[in-house]
Length: 385
Image 1 (cartoon, rainbow, N blue to C red):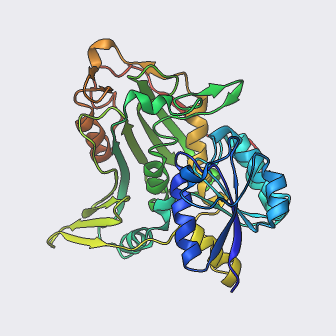
Image 2: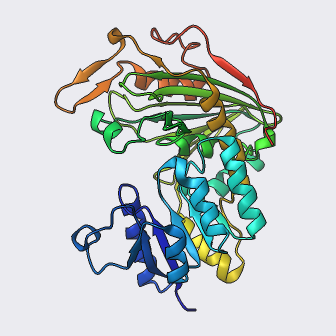
């Protein structure tokens, strides 16, 4: 098989991970990095070697390189237009998460991709974990009895510079366009998408009600300490709590509650803990399929895509609920403190609240968080097509 030519749009920031991954797949003979699309060209020192062709115009670069795949790792508001630029040329896609900043933009992207007849993979790497089908099998076998709910927890630390890393960072809108760069929709979006996937709620029409509580300790527009509860039309409720202002950095996880046990999935580590009545705890580790490698496999052998756009519809309903919710409530100054050494804001007690939400499926207000506003914002989900 000849290596598939690939163009990467967005090689800085998280794009550096894609550069390293493309080099790995290039060494394996699967792909060839044919071009990089950046508004400001990379230097050889920055890139770490001889540069491929570069251009600020993705369409022109796709034309001149003959690329068959475009990896899009650019600011959230640009995702739809760049994806459609590639799709109209018959170029297949790996599109970073979140796929779009609104449900309308997601639909425009997904419909355009379908009309063009190209393959599109959404970059939720956790859904490439072998743990996901394994957990689904455990659930189907009744290993923990009837599933009663699914929790997600993400307690991360991010310094104040994190929100200055790019003009769109920490923004809900910019220059009249939606961004929605909140804790639940971007840095800890994997917790939401993975919890939904384990519960079998993946498509947009499967969501009935979404409740959000959005707060911020940092001086930003978007949320940094938030929770969401999703009620599907059928299937278990999902509650996910997230913060970027944790006392200590923790491994994010998804917790499947059953009538006779529970399953904990640390999705960044591909690690699973099964606890059930009448058995000792059982721990497993799984491999992971790289999503670009899976896209290549799809194009060459017909393998099923792991994360096609339709599998992220329910997640995009959550993004839309966050977008439509009132702007995040600033936490009172008494609710957080700044660490001079790390130059970040910490919300005391939030680590326990995040874990408590995953454990009880309750929202911050229901857990008695002293800083949580007394009102949450439920949104009945209706079709926006």
